[in-house]
Image 1 (tube, each protein chain N blue to C red):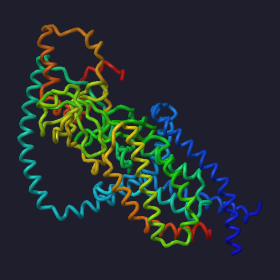
Image 2 (image 1 turned 180 degrees about the vertical axis):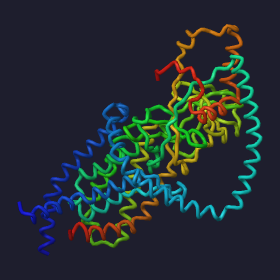
Image 3 (image 1 turned 135 degrees about the horizontal axis):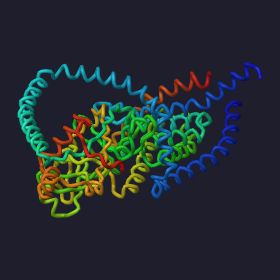
Image 4 (image 1 turned 90 degrees about the vertical axis):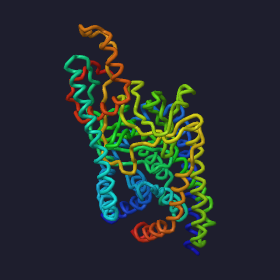
Length: 334
Length: 172
């Protein structure tokens, strides 16, 4: 009893002190929370986030190694049970891809013919940075990933991030050795996209569910969109390159269209961050036009940008070539 | 200062900081790409268990500033609005501390139920703030799964924490 009594006295004193502290801290947090409404992008907050990133990156990297190994082992054991089915589906895929390879070779031939004629202007080059996913927000509403490449590797906020399937998201914070990617499913994510086939543009907005939705600027755009059509980035706004594969239209609702993403976030481990330099329009206009006249040049470049077959193949080729196309890198402005 | 008192000081500061460190470790676990069951199962909110457990059994080992730091770390690492998780954790800690005497000596089932209520309140605050900030009512599916997983895991985690508290913090 004696001990209990002493404890209670201690407790009372402590509670009085702790109560004020807790109240103050709760107030501080509430004010912080409110200030997010007006100043989420304030440099203090950004610096704090970047500081936390660089502080946590080594810890997360140490965590991510063993986690990856365990996932590999579990995945391998699971795959043993499906080897036959997988073999069959892979064979079918190879069959289908052979046709595409044939088409791609034909198109490459065609492009080199245009290049020889001086009609073709390759899109601006990109410098890819490869990185490993070391962190992922385990939050229900905030969808982001942390990768182990940062400013030192040339990563900066705004850049596009792709994996082997398609667009993953864009960089929002970058510290020295790590960066945070906002995924397409996050409610704050807005990416300008283009629907192939119906040839309309819209904004892909995250909905915190697996499927983000395309919001169209014009109502009648929605009527021309059909399920199954391919969705790629439109490049509007200039921060993302045009033609990165995003997904396919899953179903069309009353005011927006849901999209099945190409990226599979449960399997994303290696990503490629695309350092894209938007071509400087003024410099292009000032550049001397080819002697053959203006008309064919405009036709080709317009067709090149808008043709349905173009964008995806372009992006793929660009990624594979990794900057060996002699691009008109006139603009360093971002 | 003698070695003995210095060691005692060290021990005391470790005792004061151990739950906070455990909470920060929970935050790191939340930020690690665990992807339980191919991403179908969200990582349980371990820091909430840390805050609840030590607020009931030994608030002196988890000062308010520690609770605040755990929450702030979580906001900074997940990239959510700053101040959201500190608010949730501090409110949870306040609610639980005021009801401490009720929970003491009760069956574990009652304490578990208390945690379920706190987790529900936390989910409610989280959902309302995020919905207000994004300007639309967000779907609650994933949050419900995450909180349910945390509540279901509570007895296991609390058992481990009780053992940790007894062996490391009290006897250290």
